[in-house]
Structures are given as structure tokens and as C-alpha cells.
Image 1: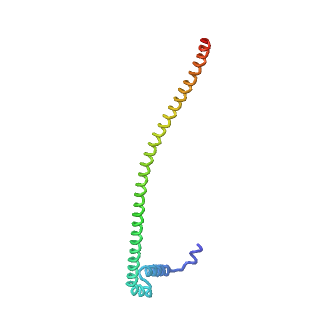
Image 2: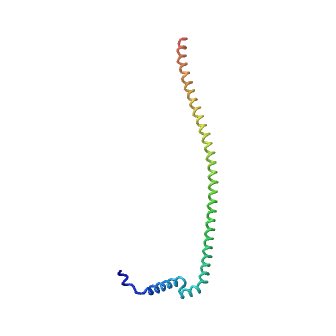
Image 3: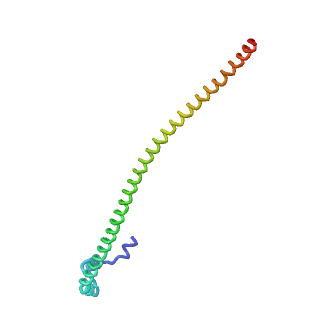
Length: 144
């Protein structure tokens, strides 16, 4: 109602405005600015050469870094092999020492048992002559 009174009497003006806006929108999509187009056309081969040089330099840098990493990995692998060999050697030595300790422990136990049995037999031998000597003394006094 209110809008009807504010509208133009002719619909042709609205149609023309739509066409102008549509054409202008298409212009932006199809064309570049002439100043940028000239700059791009002249600078394009130089940019390509510069980008190519940068890629070559970065590739060389990556190759050098990769080779350094490979060299460091090889050093670490060599160190790991050395450590493994040392560990195997130490394990062998530990096993030998463990066996020796076992044999020494058995020998000590044997000596302890021998010592204990020797003490027991000495104690028994010491107590047996005392009993006989006590019995023997009265017999000898009886003979007198």
C-alpha cells in the first residue's frame, strides 16, 4: 500500500537498472585491471625463474638435511650394535661369575658341614675319654 505509492509508474526503469547491475557484475569476473595485467605479463617469466631458483635451493637444502639425518642415523645404529655386543659380553661374564659363585657357595656349605661334623666328633671324643678316665681311676685305686 505505502510502497505502491512510492514506486515509479513505469516498470521499465527497474528493468534497465537490473540489466546494468548484471552487466557490471559480469565485467568484474571476466576482466583484470589493465595496470595489473601489464605488470603480470612482464613480471611472469621473472617470477617463474625466481620461484624455480627458490625450489632448487630448497630442494638442495632438504637433500643436505636428509643426508645429515641419514649419517646421524647410521652413527646411532653403529653405537647400538656396539652396545648390543657389550651387553652380550657382559651377560656372558655375569653368567660365568654366577656359576662360580654357585660353586663357591657349595664349597663353603661343604666346609661348614665338615667343620660342624668335625667339631661334633671332637666334642664326642673329648667327652668319651673323660668318662673312661673317671671310671679307670677308681679301678686303679682298688688294685692298690
